[in-house]
Length: 159
Image (cartoon, rainbow, N blue to C red; front, side, top):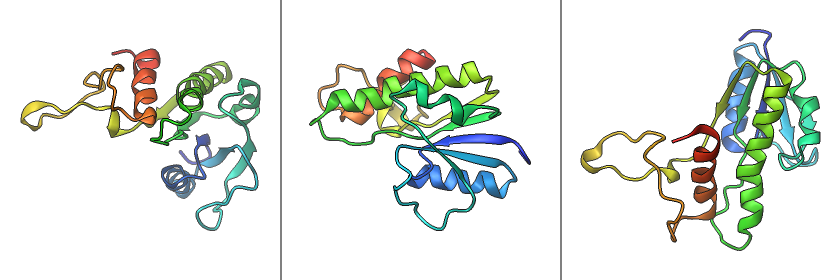
């Protein structure tokens, strides 16, 4: 990992920030994708090279991914409210498709994608879930953030 260039989406969030810090500690050169350069960081910035971009705008992703070997896609709209499901879908489904497409075009070697345990259905007997054991997209009480992650899992990664 020493010297490798890595892009972390969601690097201003709790999980993304810790991933970025761990990558820096391992010797990687870390870029962070952010919607706003004015957004606060969780603690003193450890040396992330910030790039302004929007997952919903593919044209803003290319520069951040240039020469990156790895992508950690951690960004997500995690709202559970149903007030704006189209916006959540745009961010979580279309945005992830956009960053994966941009990574492929940029020649990124590996992608690490994070989701949420909220998309996994319970299995009897405490068996471990897998990506193929997810909630059905017709679930009426499924929060929008979990629903979009379920759709995304099927669209991008198969069942």
